[in-house]
Length: 150
View (cartoon, one colour):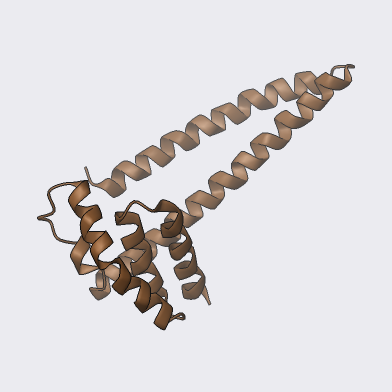
């Protein structure tokens, strides 16, 4: 099973669990809101607001995943994946991280020199991700998504 299929199954499973949580929280929220106690009413309101925040976060992450996957596919179709990270001969994650660290300056310089290229930022995001820097990877990928949309 490919990594993409495993990720989709994981997202679907977690989304289902979140929906079940929302249903149970909603039932409790209605019960608490029908109370005459101010603290119970406040808890009922919180049980309505917090799941709404969860829905917002879930939708945001799903949209990010969908858009970033589209861009990765476009890079692959154009043959623009970071070639150092594509090799099927990479034995384990630590070797991949070392390779990503070694080529990182080149991809960072490319993104800085061509700040309007979504491809450059997407490649930088992939290298950040391979190096284990998820925060910067997501930031670079968000920049690539933004550039592609505009």
